[in-house]
Length: 293
Image (tube, rainbow, N blue to C red; front, side):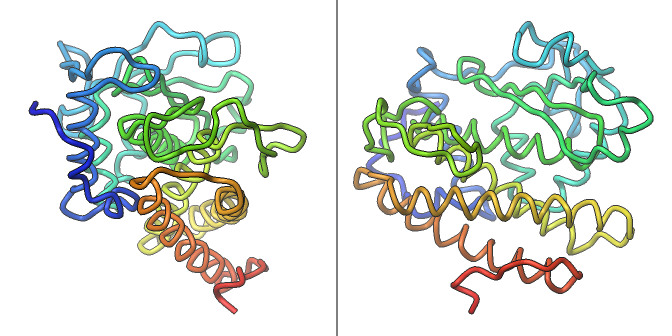
């Protein structure tokens, strides 16, 4: 793939996933032509090579050698686990994010959370997920619950996208200008601190998850499923708002990051208002953000 000059990128279009895939194409071009802070080589997409697949054969399902989501807490799930297929169908309800997923991700490692009793899996609606910068294109996700799995897929796709743009959780080559050794209070992990790059990863992945929650709610008719998604939306929206507030207070940027951050915070702000409005309309008492008053 031809090298892409970052100076030619329309950075305001890189925040919210775009219909037409502009941001996806740019992220993929950057990943395929340049390294990132923790990835020394350019990305080369891994073929399925006979492995089971999802998304009409475009994404392989295979187990990776990794330690972050491994026994005893996590056990490998069958590649044909039905919840993974259901999760993909949830992703399709946000077409721009679905297209981004199949473009940036080539491998999904499915697993089960061994800490959840089998009889409680349908009630445990969240998920655990992880992705490796050195293995761009790969992610691990629990499949205990189909919608929780969908959230994990979109969460790690968002993180891989940021890495392609030059922002790791520990440091950044572009967009973020804060000293990587400078730590700031984490608004979602009491008593812990993190660099601004980690704050952006949290805020950005939460914004993508919140948007997915709302897109699915638009067409979801099942009362139990709607209630589960609304519970997740309430938690995710509060966390996203807190992370975005931290970014607004502390983030330092380069020129590209300035326009990217303005676009991101604008999208996240609009998503926060929509989320709280949806929650209020469905009987979940929340505090509307100041922008909605």
